[in-house]
Image (cartoon, rainbow, N blue to C red):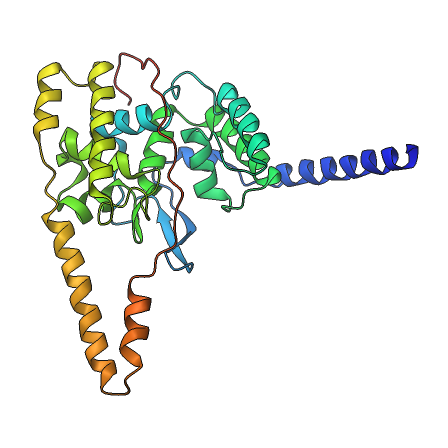
Length: 304
């Protein structure tokens, strides 16, 4: 028994040293203060392949903070991290609840990541669910809060979020779904895009679950009105607005036509080809829907 205890303590000590070295070798975050700097990261598409993605002004869809509507900033804050302006990178209470939940489920089912943690993960870490990666995420988030303003963190977050198939960032998302610049988004459209964040690949994919996205966007609009971001009249107007989903349907129709063309071309080569084309054309990995976060009082002043 004593030998087993010593072995366990030794394993813990070795892991602690490994973790300390890993944290020491983490990339510097001070470089992110420079709004003119560009960082190239790797993003995974919906088929599992990685592609380079530029974070910074060299990205043609890059949207500086001044061009992002306040309603868009508040929509993601209230829906994803209501205590964003009060915490220093991590939400201790949320982490405790997540640990309790994960122990009950015997898995890493809930992450309790703040917006700052999500930025750290998206820019510097993989998506693996391990204790080591979580420790790195927390460490980087704390450093970001020390080096960057809240406004800069939100700017980075909104420029790397996933909103569709290889659609990353509010600049690309606004044009992809609504054919307009982010600065021109209405409160309803802001809430619509924010509603997709927990699962744009499946659970909150507007092509597949439009009603679910609209329902969650209604909830986000209520939060915006409750926190004073929208007046009662603006809330009623936004709630009555139906997002122009015509562009979405057009994209779906074009995708179906491409599949039909490929199938017809393949049929000339052999009877089995069309089925393989059709099976591959709409392949998409499933994503677990995230729980809708509870709101907490937000600061009266709009985010920078």
